[in-house]
Length: 136
Image 1 (cartoon, rainbow, N blue to C red):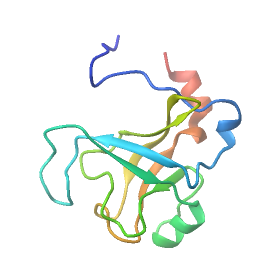
Image 2: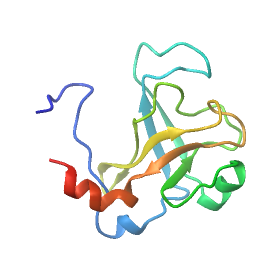
Image 3: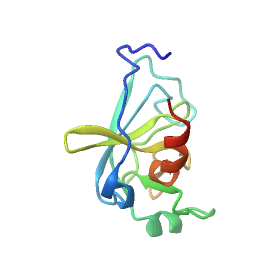
Image 4: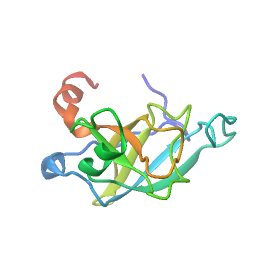
């Protein structure tokens, strides 16, 4: 059993028509205790950032590896705000109809907050069937 606490709370997963949404141009929130800059020290408190979700085609142009539909990207073109080392596995979420909903899982990026390189997240909706079969 998972014990709920200040830092451990349930979150909704996308359902219905939201399973088909790209979420592009939505302003999503990422949270974590990772480093505050590339190569820096971990944060002593949980931090959060609000980031715009990119079109996958634009994100694919930024990276050498393909950004397929199993990913989504979020960040500012100018950089400066991003998830960083130690945040991997954390949630990218937004409010849908007043409920916090997880749309991504922190995966990778080019350093942290590099201009022109958004953070890359695993797209939760692509794993809906697996999640429904395996979550308690």
